[in-house]
Amino acid sequence: MARFAKRAIEFHSGYVWNFDWIRRGIEFAHRHEMTSLILHRNDIVDMVVYPGTLFGASDAGRNIFERYREIYPKLYKYTPTRRSGPYQRRDYLRRVIDLAGRHGIEVWFENKELSFPDILLELNPQLVKGGTLCPNDPFWWEFVDAKYTELFQDLPGIAGIITAPGTGESRLAISSNRCTCEACKGSTPQRWYRELIMAMHAPIRAAGRELMIRDFVFDKKAQTELAETISGLPEDVIVSLKNTPHDYYPTFPDNPRLGDVGNHRQWVEFDTMGQYFGWGIGPAVIIDDYRKRMETALRHGVEGVILRTDWESLDGHSCFHTPNRLNLHAGAALAVDAAVTDRTIHRSWLSETGMTRQGADDAELDAAADWSARLFARSWEIVSKSLYVNDCVFSDSSNYPVSLDHAWWLAEKKNSLKDWDASKENALETSDANVRAILAEKDEALRLVELQPALASDPPAALTEAAHTDLVGRMETFRLYVAGWRAAVHACILTKFLLDRPTDDGAFAREVRSRIDAAFDLLQTLAGEMKAYAAATDQHFAAYNMLGWERLLTLRDDLSGRLADMPQATAQPAVVE
Picture (cartoon, rainbow, N blue to C red):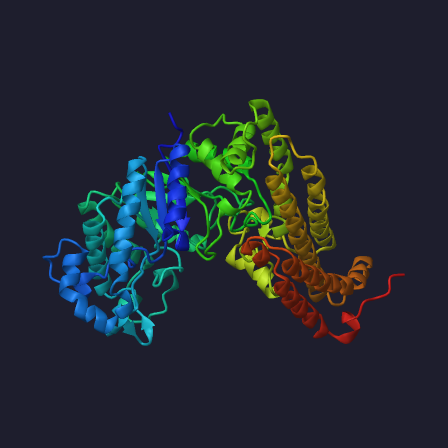
């Protein structure tokens, strides 16, 4: 019997509308005993319903075509580009649901509410008050009821809806409300969350389907407000929680909301692609992290696991493009069996991706799996010592920061670790000892990544030549990526030290001044190397997104400009005696 009753694979954005990729996901799910396919777009429901009532359709319509028969002239008048899109996507999704069902896979839609088409504002100008959208206008609850009622009339095979009401990433959210009307002044986030959730719950429940609320928030305040709402919701509402608070940061503690959702079923979410751990361009195989966090989830009564394969802000890239697909194999296997070995996981990845030659025997395949496990054994350690600074998120979704303020905003405000781990309050302080430790952390990351080519140099007999060539090329990209991180963090922390302590004339301060020009020069040198590498190679586009040479140059200009604005005597490097 599987450890988790529900085991889901999740596709985002562009992949939702790519039938070949969806078929691939269904086939993977079937092979790996998964139960569910999740299709995630913030506006997925709005892309398949008009809704007809918004354009004057009567209640007589039983499907999108009967509604369309009544409203097509008005659709063409007001929103011609939406006229045929919803019914085409509706038919496409019916086919997806049918195909998944043949394999015993249920299909869920995931979005972020409130979401709505632009034309709605023209047809309902009262929704804009004082130049700002009002989230508390009662129209919204009628609109939500109508669109979910129509959705389940047209796609009755959907297993349920997963939504995130607490994030500011929806088109309209109470967490980012700027309206100052009387209704907004008299409301609370808790009340708004409940109004929205119950407006969704009624038609979903009437259709005999399920509603899942994601505890996806950006700070403790929003988490508390949403948690207070969840505690009073009907018990059939499921709660989905990221494995860590706020987002998928493997250096962060477990999500404190696990097991603290009242009498609600729980699912837990994992990222396999690596939005915050290198996209697989910097491979980060986190099997051990999954083992630990899944055990924690089970202890807290979690029944479902979601494995995210891509990221909604990066169409065209997923774990399927990189060695991070190992994380997908690991998550799927561990959700069924805690005792599955690393060898089994690596062998599954190598075999299913065609990286092993036909005719290889079991001993050869095991040897190849063991070789793969050794190759990626320290991949997460390398990435964690590169993208993170003393465990704090220093990256822009794994991209280099573009300024000193940007880096500190990412680490201490947007993705604050100290909000969840009080021991990290001074993780980025510019004391002599802490700066030395940060510099050493980046040096160690570069040392480790430079060992990777040697590990890859002696391929096992079962590995194909094409697979070996591909992996060797990835290791060079990995090295360049980590070298960029070492240079970026060195330049940032040295600059921050000088800005924080402009009058310090101690031995370490003099050392920092002696190193700063070389740190800036290295950013420029590496930017040139990355630009040349892009011109000379032909890898998946995401590799070049990550080797962001323009980002490094932008960062260099910011840092050098900051120091140039300091008093001239302080900004100049000092001679070390």
